[in-house]
Structure formats: C-alpha cells, structure tokens
Image 1 (cartoon, helix red, strand yellow):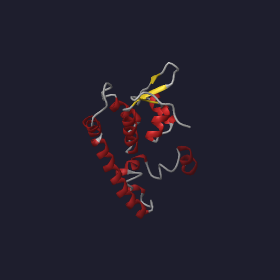
Image 2 (cartoon, helix red, strand yellow):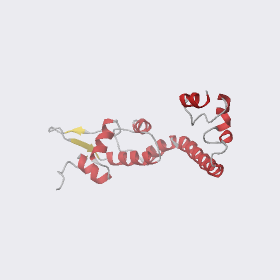
Image 3 (cartoon, one colour):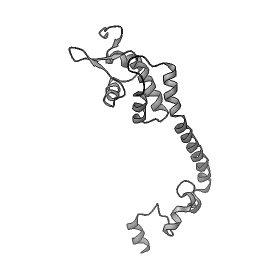
Image 4 (cartoon, one colour):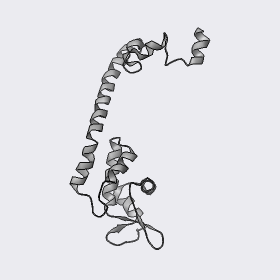
Length: 159
C-alpha cells in the first residue's frame, strides 16, 4: 500500500522508516528520547524534516560503535536546528568521541590479550589472574576463592 504524499520538505513516519531501514517503533522511541523531532499535522500525524534521515543514520552508526543514547542526544543537541548539518558538523561531533573510543579499543585489546593468558592457565592461578583478580586485590580479603563463594557459603564450608 503506497504511503500518502507530503510536501517536499516533510516525511511521514512510514517514509522515514522505509528510507532509513529503521522500524517505526524505533523512530517513536528515538523521538521519546529526544534524538529526533517531528511536527504534527492538523490531523495529529507526525511529519519529519528531511534531515531526520541523516540524524537516524548518525544514531545508528553511533550505536553500532557503542555510544550511549544519552551521549548521542547530547551530540545531536549541538547541531543546528535551522539547517541540515554539514559534513563539518558531523566531523566535530564524532571527533569528540575519539578519545573515548580509543580508550575502549585499548581496553578491549588488553582484555583480549589477558583472555589468551587466562585460557592458558585454566583459572588455576586466581592469585595472579588479570581478569578476575587484577594485582591480587582479593588476596587482601583472605584466603579462598572470594568471588566464587558467597559469605553464607563461606561460613558453612569453612566456619
């Protein structure tokens, strides 16, 4: 069933969904979260400006790399509302996340490297495990597998 036509500058929620590949329910969710905006017709139907398509693409790409919806909304709030964002606008927003993404990449690389060591040890050496007990912080709490036993289990078996 064809969608109703609107003015050149406005899109229906169905048209935005079709063109962006995002479900209508997701668009409604994005709107409730303040990520996109619509206006209403006299018959209370949503209408979106054409730049909404770029905003939705930005939201999806940002989510794909792990950026939170809160951070995405804060970034989108910095964009001009009176014009379509330029490539420079988008570059400025994504540059602000570069440090955070670089830190996450480093953390994931360290996790990957430590995980290889962990698989090799088979968790037979929890005292030096880089994943579950970095720098032997649990050793200060006493002997035993602190993360594996609850306080109640610990008392029953050892107390």
